[in-house]
Image: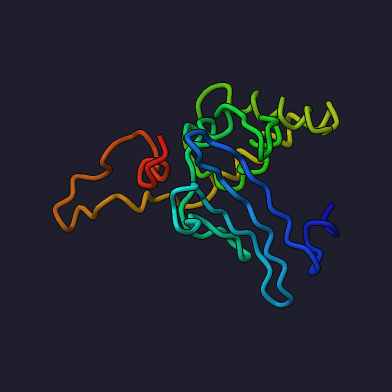
Length: 169
């Protein structure tokens, strides 16, 4: 699989329809000496794609909360992209950064891993490991203001707001 994803002659692109014409697009950028993964949002009315995150040895840019990830994964499938919800979840999982995951997150990820062929005996521990990694980094919502500048903290506890900021509802 890595030979296909990292082939410098190809740039695999995966589109995940969200609804309302929006798509999350994952591009494996395979330039020699400059490889990485770009996460974009697209819409037919936009003049260009909007990059919201990238992976160049480390994740940078916007991340998703579990609620936002599930919102994208469970959007109605339409032609022109990845329709399988398990594949959608696993493709966008690297963007998850949340410390307080809801009950059922591990079960859902475990089911997705099994659906794509992960062995039954390793799927549960893999799901726990992957979700543990999503909470392992220092977390700070970039929308939070500093208490030193008069802010009272986070604007809400509903998530990173990346979908809302891009007009994806």
